[in-house]
Length: 318
Image (cartoon, rainbow, N blue to C red; front, top):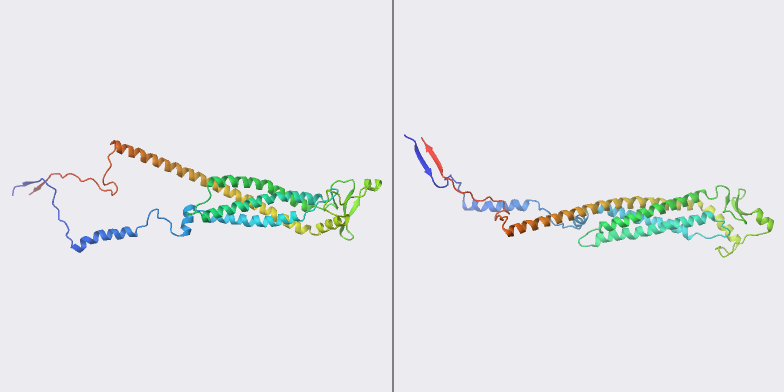
């Protein structure tokens, strides 16, 4: 048989699989079922924990740091306040250790108090805001910066107070230079007694314990206070040491939170820049579409290709 040429002007006919009416409806339902099982992208948080993580992914660590700061601040205030509350002013500059101790440790009360207030604000803002969101990282950068710098100063003051407390009375006498005299330690009965200076003995100048600068009503009361202060020295040193350790803990944690806030601020600014660039790009594309420079595809959302024109096919058979 001679070859014959058959020309098709329409689309080639291929066998098509037939399906029952029930099978025809199974296709879309299967696709819908598959889509329903697919994980949702950027799904809205449902639980309170998910909302907290959406507001700040490291919220648990930051709250833990803030809680530690509050606890440390309360302990530090308790120790420092007990020192300040028991301080009394003596006459003739005889209580040099007590005066310096009182002055140095007082400054720690300021940083401890501000730490407690600021940490409580950060925790409450995160937990009570709807939806949960932390304090603006820029504010955290500023306040935590000021706090850790302030802790550098107050922690050093507290360290000086500890050194003064530990060295007080170790050289066998108590008191700054005075023309009246100073306290010396009587190892026989383990007490501190007032020893008049040569100048006071020569000119008969006795000490005045109830002057306007003193908080004592008599010299006997002042002597009793000095001896009670000596007996309570170990406890006093322990409280000062505890307050000083709390100061350095506050310094480290505020510095860590400051660095963390700097990172959060950088990320926040970068996200804002990316969002602004995306909005600008959308505006440019929208203007190009409106002007006809770019033609919008009708099927772009579904990823469908444009229908292709039919091409004549030529088949040869032997």
